Length: 424
Image 1 (cartoon, one colour):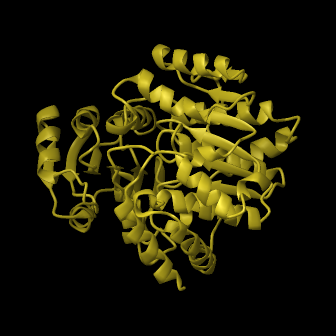
Image 2: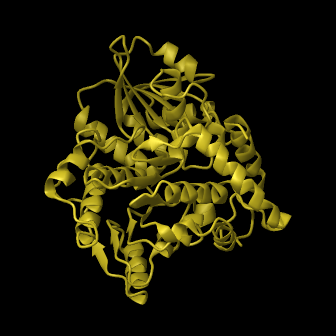
């Protein structure tokens, strides 16, 4: 099997949607020889900040000399971003080899219980991390937690970053319901770290932690911690506090020195989240995957803190199943000009509808509808500073078009997914 054939096979798995349940991934893991039993995990769930927190934990433990696995989603450009060892992407040959191996085991499943794309990828990652003899795997949930395929592991610590309204159609229409899904990663006797502030959501987490006798550490989101230099925004201080508290709790199992902690934090790299890049012509672009309302509020706070003197020009695109009207209302007052674009996804929000919402929220701003990202980039090429925000699909497309991604061909389509009406 070639890499291209492996990627096509993964694309073909999308017809099976994104079912929620642990029976299928457990069976897949068993057929793979239970690679998860040879690994240690820190399991990270939450609405926003999962990726950044994972990146900080990985960087700290790598600075401490551990061989680290990192499993995250979605990817920005290349599928291979999802599975990394010591921040090196899994190779194309390894993807092809593991997909070929797993493909054989899929024949044992009946059509009605066929593994989904995410379930297959999670097991692929486990097989790779076990083969690479990782000392520690930083393991991010896909969606929710309780019935997410990643929840077949027993970690040495669990982390819940925060709780906000997102994916309500699958996780529930209240903070309590969403918290219950995220808190499903809490295991008996395993420490849990969170920075959740919302009273109703925190109450759910406390209740489940108590039921499972899991020691709970509550991180103050307003703590005085210095930002990792590559990550802007006060919300990254909260994520750093989560990472530091987790490291402290695990000191007996995995000792890490203060020097190693600081080295890890100051060298962390996580693209697409308040990422400031500069083109060869000097134009500066701030990229942020503010794909839900909580993310948009964090972006607005960061812009008001770090770029208050700038006349802000936005390029914005979102997915239709997000709360884009509120995101537009949050960001619109900051802008003097806004280009709206469709996202390279079947689920894209209509650029004209985005423009209407931006205009109603800020009639003074110039709002321009563009047919695609290329048109918006060309129309704004003389603007010294641009903010490109919204869907992470859009951020990946920007990195690729501007030559800031190592991959030539984008694999954004592998981020697409649907769900079936029932969990298994």
